[in-house]
Image 1: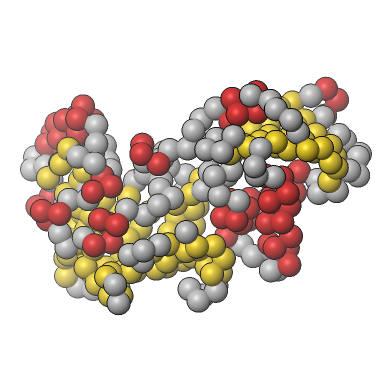
Image 2: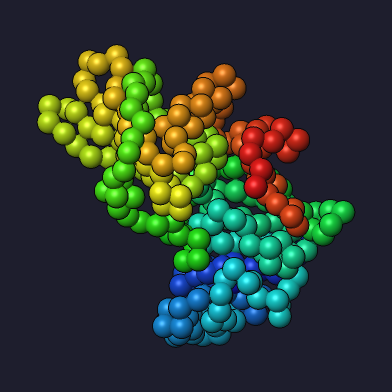
Length: 282
């Protein structure tokens, strides 16, 4: 959806995708419905938003039924683009439809952790517009439908198969730290998790890569110093996660707000402290 926001002492257009009407109503009340456009993929939700906005405001903003990932080119360019669903791969249309110097605010996540709030600024690049900026806060939103990870983590593990068994000295509780979990999500792409409870405080951490069929389990026992690990498939997910935790520790245990994202025409990459310090590119 496109919203209008205040920029300096003047009003300017912005885009927000998708929305049920609530965010558009707030912006319309503040800035004027004529400067607000909202995009919603579900026709029923979009129709309800039109009715609610009309009833609440008298003059509703433009409500477009369509794929939010494609933006709304008809009203572009925007000075602000605001997403109200989480993504991992930032849609190119959002960047191309935001004016140079404009800002994109979006919830962003990995398959391990959803999510954080990014504030990207659009600038011209040698191969087209580039958006770059830091993690500014936490923001857990539902995933954009096309980017939602598979939900049944345990289905991968239930498939079984030959395992590589070992032991680890890394207590899986350590990864309950939100900053450690964020770094692990960046460095171990495509990995999801689940837990299973056992007797007397015992529990199991399950990891799975639905795309490749790999899985791993770590059995936690109270007062233990080492824990049983099983891994299956082409990826050693626990080994990757241990390596990610080691990197995070050696980097000084950085908070997630020290990370940022740059999205160019060909790829996007996560960085630490400075866009030139790439943590992971894809």
